[in-house]
Image 1 (cartoon, rainbow, N blue to C red):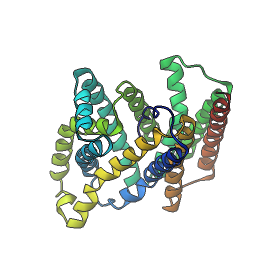
Image 2 (image 1 turned 60 degrees about the vertical axis):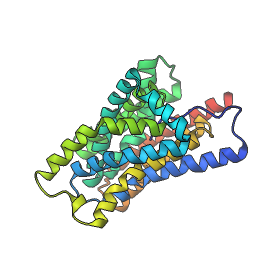
Image 3 (image 1 turned 180 degrees about the vertical axis):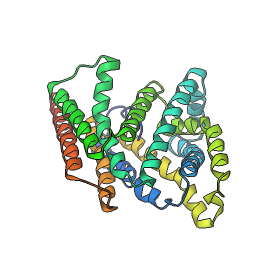
Length: 306
């Protein structure tokens, strides 16, 4: 999940809009079914899964840069991202995406996919709150209702779990912080992923050393496991490429509504795996979904007024 890029000059054609919609939707579908891939790694230490994802994301992102931009423009984009201020910004965003990925992998591998879905259902509503608090954006009455319903939903979720859903809230907070910081580093998605992955390499080395000190790394256990871990890079980069392609060809309203596709699929995956879903927990999600319904209605209403 990443930032939208600038619209195509002159506006996309109808065929480009269709291609953009399919591309953006496919990105959200991949993100939505990501737990299915991570479930294949259920025997692997969380530290190694996180480290291998970052490690293989770097070459995948490098290939993506040149596929999407070409050789010379890609080099220029990388050069721009390596300027001191931009590099510092991406280093900070890398820290937040590191924590976000770590929390997500932990939740999925510990059979808490529904909790991870909660985080991404809350994300668009948190984005509204961030816009009001940090960017002075105006908030509408439907958005206030949406935020209030979401807040009550989180409280009910805490009652259902017996404790506040801290990890889901942390997952949502780190993603929101990442999005805010990446807004200040307007580089293409693949370039940003490349620089962030490279910035995290010292942590990758530390995680692999830490995991290997307790048991042999799963990457060395078999060719099939090595392959599964290595494709974490393409699994990370491909949806980013698809999203970047689609975001330039569809409206922000369409993107805003498509973003609910990923947590919906994650939620369905969690149910399919038989994760606990009590009536009280269901009530919390109903409240959050009502909030999202108000949010979506307000988004469509504003789009029609433009």
